[in-house]
Length: 166
Image (cartoon, rainbow, N blue to C red; front, side):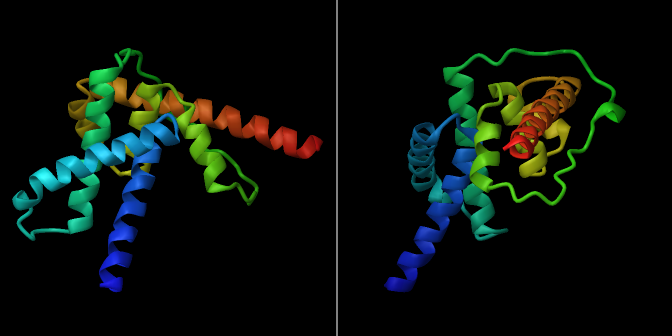
């Protein structure tokens, strides 16, 4: 019984991290997790033991988070496509950035940028899949990703400057 409880808690923790990535704050993540479990319990009979159970749970959680943003916020569509060669990588100089700090930066991104960034970078979705999920064009997905990266890069550079000046 105790082993089952630990496994359950592990799933809850992993799914909560997914919710945090797609939410603006801790409270929104809690709401999304609760909504996800309602969907999971409602659809548990649909799981056919094909593929990873954890992956199935994660996909439902991501879809629940995306559905929440589709119904509660209007995503502004940006049709501008930036040159992919202009995307710069951030040089951290092996700086020890806390995951909590990085998560806060991601949560501060505008919704449309945060969703695309998380789907592409953190959850390995292709731009075609992202476009379908968010009902945007592939070019818009690429543009939103580029803008998210630029915003995060600027925020990290500001953080590095503050650290050097301290």
